[in-house]
Image (cartoon, rainbow, N blue to C red):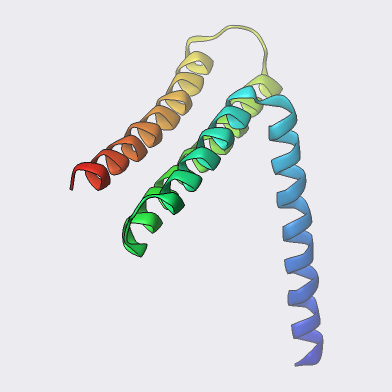
Length: 120
């Protein structure tokens, strides 16, 4: 039992390290991730300053963070496509465009959540 617990702790430690390395790599290479992160900080500060319920704050912050999730997946897709082949190809363009659309959809959703919270 102790060995299994230790193995899980090691796995958790490695997961944290790899995730942090992924975040740092994306931060270094993706201007849009840095921009969305700054927008999220502003959004979080605004959510904390405004007279919102805890549920409204959770929704605004959670949907804002989903933009970062989408941006990270989009970065992974773009890097994978570029790793396979840097030549222009219709399928490569489609993959990158769909990833970008995912980020846009997340951003529109977060904006709609903010709008509903503010007018609701």
